[in-house]
Image 1 (tube, rainbow, N blue to C red):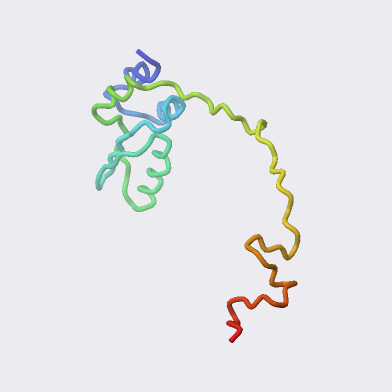
Image 2 (cartoon, helix red, strand yellow; image 1 turned 30 degrees about the horizontal axis):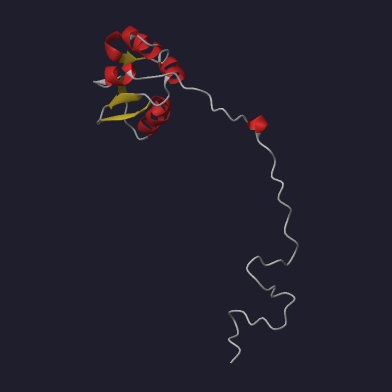
Length: 125
């Protein structure tokens, strides 16, 4: 059993509490959670449960409970711990591109200094 399967096995009947939700987020922030309200139910990622619960309560409804949906055991069996992204911010190099000179047009002529350029406003007819 991996860490996520062990964690899910400790949940009483698959229900999450305020204490167990942060632990699930640390393990797998995108794990699906079933939120049952007075007027319906929905599934969202574990890290979005608090936000959506506040939205439900702001709308005048209440949150009955939060649980793990059915068939999440298969997903948990394939789970692997997240690996940190190999490129750290400290390894990023600052941009070295020189600023373009004032009045420079990368598409051809410079209308600011070219007397023969007609532009879109004057067809030259």
